[in-house]
Image (cartoon, rainbow, N blue to C red):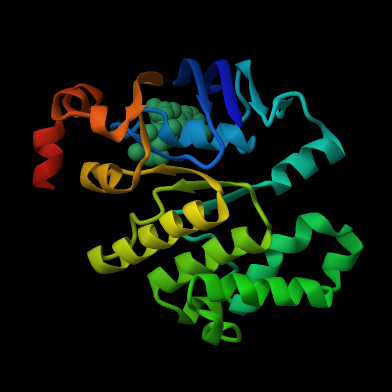
Length: 252
Ligand SMILES: Nc1ncnc2c1ncn2[C@@H]1O[C@H](COP(=O)(O)OP(=O)(O)OP(=O)(O)O)[C@@H](O)[C@H]1O
Ligand SMILES: [Mg+2]
């Protein structure tokens, strides 16, 4: 479903983000990416929807090159890819409903979306999406009146309204408390299973990676140094991915 073919990324200042990464992620997987800060996790994720342009290699989605896609083709490919972030990235002063409807923008002409008029089906889809994450009763509240966990659920609902086939989550729980963390990760895991949405999550917590992943990718200095099912990701493997720093991490 998502295929990286010898992908490298060097930032304009010469810093290496990814080094010759080749990997295929299959439909319906829940892949967790781990690695030290600066290892290339976000670069990897952001390359998939071209928030980051890669320097060499190619990325295919369902057999089509997103690397080479332009204009309308790129827009249509991006429509299938939802993304959530540590900081939620909502329009704070807009209602929850409007934020979720933003997931529909890629389906309509710019003129139509500028008027803020969405078809009835979009509204139904937005409410359905909010229901899936259990916050439909918050639809008319301002996004910034919600708790962090609720805001992250709005962001998840936005990707559901988008009818994305792929969900990219860049440290989705980094701003949340431990209880909310589990709720949001449970939501992500449930959506992955029930809706068969291929999901890739960057996480800093080894325990969460083990709990939720079907497959783990470990990055170190831009290189993919581990790729395997969660059962194979032993303490030794994690220690290697984290460059012998897992003890320090555990203490934080
Ligand atoms: N826009 C940028 N310009 C220059 N260098 C960058 C840029 N973004 C990231 N980098 C560098 O690329 C490398 C990989 O960064 P990336 O953000 O992918 O790491 P990460 O694994 O997501 O780290 P973290 O866990 O801190 O989020 C780092 O050395 C980082 O400093
Ligand atoms: Mg990052």
